[in-house]
Length: 254
Image (cartoon, rainbow, N blue to C red; front, side, top):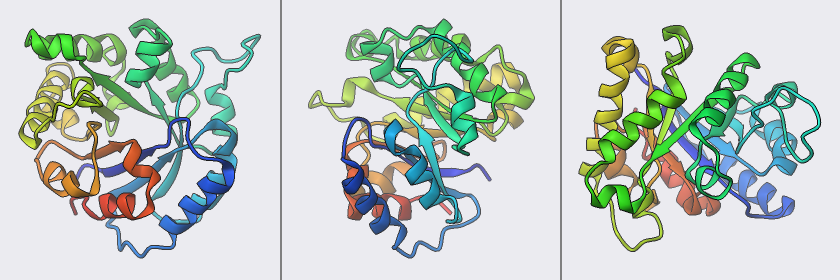
């Protein structure tokens, strides 16, 4: 069965003390998680080593970086390489988040390079795709997502993409007052899996976890995660509240 994943994206939030308190409260909860369930915490770079050390002894819990450089090393002040992440045993990295695409002009070419260098250093990408409001309003979202997937991932071999993680972000429904239904989430997740099937076949596509990144919270997690092609969520604001995120973890499919 595909991995069912609750991934927390803290973004640029919390002091170290606040982050430690949040993590300690979550880890103190009894979850009884199944072998196919995971909780991943994408924390700010200054906290990676501290949070990795907290999760490394916990079954089913992992630490992730929110980004990595497209280069191996060199004169890139302020950047963090995938090799550095691997050296402190960080297992996952978010690549292509909508905020990185929009605010930092990360192109499909750059993101493909980041995917490659992460895999070369044994860091597993959580590859993000999604459409803004203008695309959704013209009903061209399927084509838009397909283009992102092809540009960012289709150069990979079947062995590289097997058991991959993709996060779908309905950017049009985040902070806009619009709401994406669980049916809309399922529709796009099924489309993503169908696109992957055209390149890698249905068997490989069925191993890929596709997370929903559209304002998941405790109140809607169970309904969204129940959809057959939704394998958990990439969670923003709700991941900063212990009781919210623990409930989201507990909403994962067994």
